[in-house]
Length: 258
Image (cartoon, rainbow, N blue to C red; front, side, top):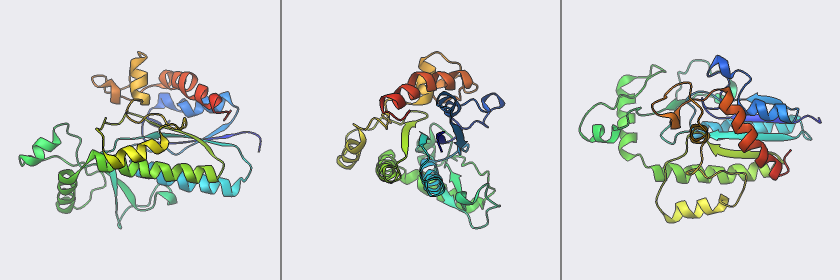
C-alpha cells in the first residue's frame, strides 16, 4: 500500500470525538491530509499512559501482521501520571476487545488531595463504573497514600524504552509527546538512567518541558474549556492544525518519515 497509515492514540486531548468541532480535525487528521494518508484514532477520554501504550502495541502489531509493507506513522499523546487502571471482572462489554476488562482509575480530581487525605478529609474518588464504594474508597486511599510521581515516571520511561524497541522491530515510525506536560522531577539515579536512554532520540519530545496543551496556550489559542487553567484545557481544531503544521510535520520531515 502506497498511502500511509497515521495512527493516533491518547486521551481526550487527542480524541476527535471529544467535541463535535474536533471531528476529523485533530492533529492526526492534519498530518494525514498533508501526506495523503488515512487515520486510525484510538484515543479514549480519561486514558492512562499504560492503556495508551498497551493498546498501541496491540494495534500496531496487528496492523503490521495484516499489512507487512504499509508505511505507518504513530502519533502518541501521553496523559496525566495520576491516572492508572484497575481490572473489573464484572465490567460491561468493553468498547473494543483490546480494551479487555481494564477501566481507568484516578483516586481524586482534587488539587489538595494529599493534605485532605492526611487530615482525614474525603478525597472524592470518581466512580463512573459504579464499583463497590467501600473497596474503591479503600483502594483509592491506599493508592493515594503511596503515590509517587517518581515511581510513575520510572515505569513510564521503562514502557517507552520497550515501546521503541518493539516499533523499531516492526519498522513503524512514531512521535511521542505529552498532552499536558509532565511534572518536573528532581534527580534520581534510576530516573536519570532511563531518561538518558531516550533523551537524544528525536522521536520523543521532552516529557517535562513540552506538552501539546502548554504549546497551544503559549501560542495564544483559547481552549474549549478549563479556561482558568489553559495548560490542561482542551483545544479546538485551530490549535490542532497549528500543532500539526508547526510542530509535528517539521519533525516528521526532519526524521525523513514523510
